[in-house]
Length: 393
Ligand code: CUA
Image (cartoon, rainbow, N blue to C red; front, side, top):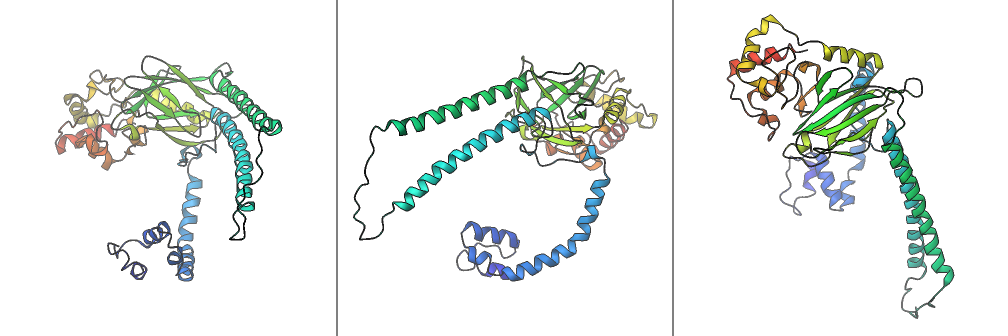
């Protein structure tokens, strides 16, 4: 590979087969800018050709993504500066104001410093190097660097206090949607008390267009074991989820989409895979989802053997399947409508046959350290239980 040859002699461990982008990154990190851009013209041409080749595919993918349900659009970039729900917007406003004030201070202080460094630098041997005149006890200067900072701090305190008040004491309309969220190691239990629905990990809420149909979601955060943290950056601020104390948070999302979030408090091995998904959908779709979750579990007679395996292997000690007397567990996620979820293991993998089979064989492969043990199922048992689970729509 030609690009790698430049480095030979300087760094003999360079892998000749390393992707070009890595070599470029290496050079940039090593500050060898001239090497990185040496073949710039050739690279530009190659980039242009690539773009022409890839463009039709990209356009296709774009038009496909515009065909999908807006509520299914996955907003993968958890950008705190692009809030799409009330508390996140309030926090963003305060953060921007604080950053703006700090930026102005930085520019003034940095500018004065830069000016002094350049204006009063040593100018060669003819410089007499005498000290400039010193100022002692200037009341004007003392006041100038005392009063404005105090005023700035007062402004920041007042603005922050107002935001904290608005986030913590919201004026809800008469009928907020209540959602109880219970943190477990390492997944989220969801309860919609008004509907008698229990689900797991994938939250559905109606969009709250203002002011026509304001319907904020009031979230009651509890923990079943250790401390967790709840945060979906585009929807709300961070909040601790602690045992024996209920914290309350709310969201009022205004744009359809599926928003990812994460547990924010180190809670054990699988803390990083304790993912949150909030699907914000139209009020009609939300009601449809609720109706689906309220329905009794599908009892498909063709998978009776799978259901028996599920019970015989004690899966029901930890998991609940509504209407199945031997499956009433509360330690693991409710599986009544398991197939309505898009992910497994609180977002660790897509919910498809391959991953589900891997999970049934040994959950510790996809999510090492999760509390579901390897049940040592043989291939036949895995197939039977898989077929049964797949009917739980
Ligand atoms: Cu739960 Cu980190």
